[in-house]
Image (cartoon, rainbow, N blue to C red; front, side, top):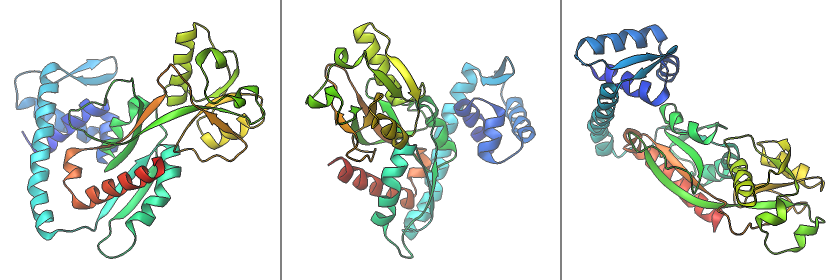
Length: 300
């Protein structure tokens, strides 16, 4: 039973397919299958089974994968002992962010970290994925900016650490000349009959719209499904539709006004997700702390 084999088993449980594991670990699918076969020969209980064309973990495989996460964390702790001894703040830290967070946080994060030989080198990527897909990104990035609705199930705790940055309300957005813009706040019954621009299914704005539909027992008329908040704001500004925009991370001009929605939960939680072994690196922790400060100022 080798550490690399345990890592592959752990990633299979987290990512759901041999192909995804191969991509995350930058090896071939054949190499992944060979390592899994070698691991299986070292134990009696079946670790994997076929579900259609996909290879999934058995209960025994899940138990071993959870133990593997602890073993990988322990190995990372041993490696980080040297890093902590050297107190190195430098190093490359990879950060992914969903679109609105990337637009609002990436630039200020660079300014917050500053420059110098002991400053982490940050490598950014934008990942606009549905809420359920964020945990898998921790296989590819040191830090993953993720969001979920406040009432949604929590992130999986096995093998992932969660650092909450902010709770951000999602507001109803309208053109300034819209009749509802004169009100200080709005209720589901006020807006359910309007024409809407919202996100694709599985994203925060659509969650709010589904909540409005549930409490009013009416289906809103969705005209546009757009994930980029800048584009959404430009469409809302025409007065043809209304929509939902985050309060802190969407930069919009005075062509759109925002009003809080009462009686329903519209809060989304912005979190940093990371593998525990990555958070043992001082450079990663420095970037995580800087992101926390940037987000606090943005929400303040």
